[in-house]
Image (cartoon, rainbow, N blue to C red; front, side, top):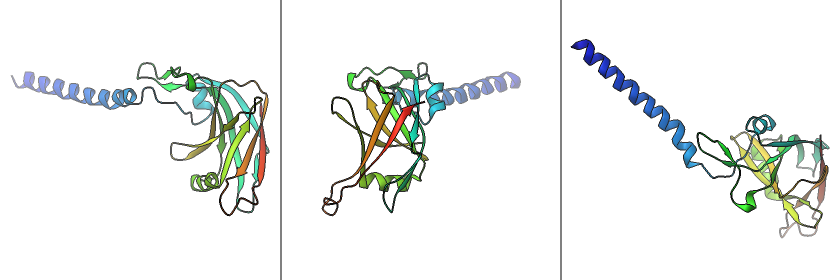
Amino acid sequence: MKLKSFLYGTFIFIAIIITIYLIAIIVPTFLSEGHVGISNGIAASKRIGVFNHEYVVEPETLKIDSTYTLRFGEAWAEKSWVHGNYFIPVKEPSREEWKGFTMYVQMMDSIVRTISFYEQYSVYTIEDDSTKNIFALTMVGGENSFLRSDFAKLGKNEMTIYIKERKTDTTEARRQTAFFTIRKK
């Protein structure tokens, strides 16, 4: 009788542990379902099957002013995606404005320094139809920062990205512009 009750108790204990594990793993994926996906590198983009092109950033180091010298890491474009569920982790976006491509340019400086840079400067590119594409600052995993922008299509092999000082009361007279180029590898 003791053996039977021990086996029964062990079975219940194992069932409870497995249930807690499955809830801890599966439930968060259902809660994030439908949110825009952000990759944290080329390897991750390839692993989930959304990678499109790798880009080369020229120059790799860009001196903006006496305070900021930017260092760029890897750059890539991927098909835009949203989080799926545990069984289908990556889905194509259903919202029309999320479809297309997302471009990333890795910032190699510390996140604190990158945030202070982005508060002072805006980063954008101008497409063929004079549409201004703004690059947003994106943090991934608390340690990586990227300039990220969405594009309906990526037809160009090379793109110029402008960095302009944000307009404030003190900077209206001297709004400097710098730029860097990214091209398909």
